[in-house]
Each structure stands twice: as C-alpha cells, then as structure tokens.
Amino acid sequence: MEVRKVIIMGAAGRDFHNFNMLYRDNPKYKVVCFTAAQIPGISGRKYPKELSGELYPNGIPIYSEYELPQLINEYDVDEVVLSYSDLSHQNVMEKASLVLSSGADFVLVAPEKTMITSSKKVIAVCAVRTGAGKSPTTRYIVRMLRKAGKNPVVVRHPMPYGNLNKMVVQRFASLNDIYKANCTIEEREEYEPLINLGVVVYAGVDYEKILRMAEKEKGCDVIIWDGGNNDTPFFKPDVHIVIADALRPGHEISYYPGFVNLLMADIIIVNKVKRRDSRFVKSIMENIKRYNPKAKVILSRLDVRPKFVDKNRMEDKNMKNDVIGMKDVIGKRAVVIEDGPTLTHGGMKYGAGYVLANQMGVKIINVRRYIVGDLKKTFKKYKHLDGFVLPAMGYSKKETNDLKKTIINSKPDIIISGTPINLRYVIYDSVVDKIPIIRAFYELEIVSNSHILSHSLCSL
Image 1 (cartoon, rainbow, N blue to C red):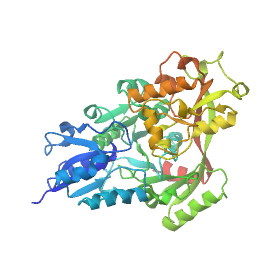
Image 2: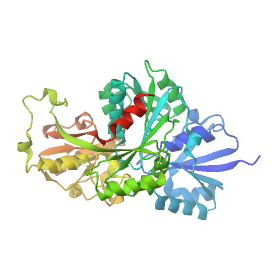
Image 3: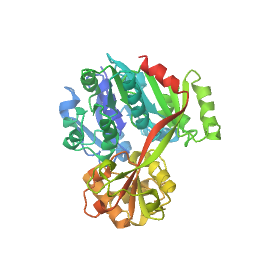
Image 4: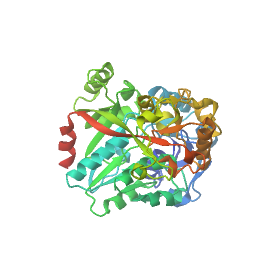
C-alpha cells in the first residue's frame, strides 16, 4: 500500500483536530509535520507522541509556514492540507499556488468529515470573519436557554498554545481554573465572560474526549459550540448560527472558511447594524438571498456601555469612592486597548473600546511611538493598524510585558479597554494600578426577528 506523505498547515487548533479525526490512526497517510502561522511562538514545538497515536512514536514536529516549500521538497510530500481559518480567498489561492508549484497537491477538507456527533442537542455559533460578534451571541443564547429552563454547556474552539499534554481536556468553571491553566490573554477573553455568567466552559486539544466530558456535565442538555475566527464547527450542529458583520460587507463571501459557514447556516445574524436600510446591510442581505436563501435572517447590533474598574482589581460594585463620571474624562489622554485577534488576522481597525472612547470625548493617544518588543512586529505585520488602538497581545508572558511597557510609555490619564477581560487581572504593575480603567462592555441586542432564535433554540 502506498502511503501518502502529508503536511498540515495550521495555527494550533483546527490543524490538530483535522489530524486527530482523519490521520492519527490512518495507515494510508503519514503526517510528516505541521506548519504554523497567525499565532506568535507556536512553531518550533512538537505535537507530542502521547497525543499522536501509535503511528507516531516520536511525535510530529511543527515548523514555521515560511519553510513550506523547503519542507515539501525535503519530505517529498504528496499533499498539503490547509487547516486554519480567516484567510481571504485570494490568500488561500496564493498558498495553493505555492504548494502546487512545489510539487504537492493542495487539499481542503469538507467540514462534515471532521464533525463529531453528540448525544446532546448542539447549537453552533460561527462567523464569516474574526470579530463579527460570536462571543456576545453565545452569551445571548446562554441567557435565552436558561430562561427556557435549559442548562447549556459551552465548548470553545481550541486555543492550545501551551503544553499540549496538559491541555487534552480543559474544564473552566471559575476564575481560579483560568489561573491554574496559566491561560493567555486570548484564552481569558473567551472564557472569563462565560464563567462570570456561571457557565462551564470546555476546551483543549482532543475534541472527541472533550465532547464526551461535556455531555456528562451535571444537568447538561444543550452543547453550545463557541467557534473561533470564522472556522466551521467541530460538532455536528442541530442549529448552525453564523454571524455576518455589517461593518465588513462583502467579506461574508470572500473569506475562507467564512463563506462555507454562510452557505451551511440555518440562521444568519447580521450584526453591528446601525440602520436597517443601510447599503451595507442591503449588500449582505442580497448575498444571503443569492447564496443561502433558505437561511433565516436576524439583524442585531452591539450595545456598548462603560464600566469602571478600581485600583484593587475589583469591579465597579466596590467603587463608591473611586467612580469616574462621564464628564470627568472629557479631554483626558487615553490608551485604547482592543481584543487582539479582531485587530490582527480579523483585519479590523478598531473595536468597542474605540467606539466608547469617541462617545466619551477623550483624546486618544497614538501608541506607535511608544510600542516595544513584539508589539513592533505586530504593527509591522498588520499594516492597517494606525496606532490609535492597541491590540491586547498576550500569547506569552513576554507579549503581556510588552503590552504593559507600552501602556506605561504612553503615560495615559486613563485606559479604555475593549477586550472582554479585566486587564488588572493580567497586568500587575504599580504604575498601571494607578491608571483608571474604563471597560467597554458590549452585549448583543436583537434589532429584528428575535422570535427566530427563541423558536429555533428553545424548542430543541
């Protein structure tokens, strides 16, 4: 039997899932390596032998994607499997052309082939782009299901950037669980808001094991798949919800695999709507009608509100003596910090923090002259960033430290944070502790057809 040699192109998530589902125990293939992109610092590791199965007693090396042509030649590779998300169609074909010109086949895997079937009802929350609004949608659905007497458990798309052997199955039910797992800022951004709602969150590396554990969670009757970037679901959904972004019209049909999500969706939520009759909304609606006319469509917006965080890292309920009024911040110099992935591979120029900063009349500091370390690389790579927002990069302690130093260098009067986490939990510094932090909280607000969600989900 001829064994086909494979490279899996990934970003520490979908790549490992595809391997586990399609290649780990399949003698017809030999995965010679993974390549890594998008996420800093994940190349140079190994997918460990403990997770690789009997066919890979030495584990599988992970290289930088920049080395791909040389790796195809060195390993005499037969096929390269694209296994990460939020790439423009142009970018996908550029990668395909590079692979084909290097002598290997370029492979895209059908989502259905890697979906796991659950014994529970599954609601999948996916998107057409990173930063479209999956997280507030998931929170909205959690609240809705609870009002209907159901007990949802959330399973989050993987973010396995640490020790993979310790991340096979992760369960988060408290902030203490986050500390024990030494989570990155990006992980905290996804887990912390749900934990604050009292929701149990699962994540990790092996999603077959993760799903079976989540199904056994006490009282669980619904699994919510909380997707990452614009990836397709790992679990076979009973209801597939996809978020489109009214601020990025046309992206719903021009990014991979977001367009796949749009074509598969049962319900499409057009989020960040300001006016129902805007040309941006009309454009998206026309694309939905053309490509997935059977999908039910909901319009929504994000309601952005300020919340203050005191010097003792507690929330506003303990701020009787430290509360800052809206009038007190007008004209103050502010550093605006946003969710990292939304600004980087999500391609957004700003988020909720910038929106709130403009509402409050502060003077936004351009941080370009103050950035240090790896943040300089981030701004160099993502040229659309103009410096008026600072991505909350924190995939490592060094990046978190660079973020802290950049804030200190900027000498702001206040910090306006659009990241979903409390920055005081992750940035410990005597200087930063003296700077007031205003958090931009944002929740989903349905503009039209709210009955579609309640009817489709609560009757599961």
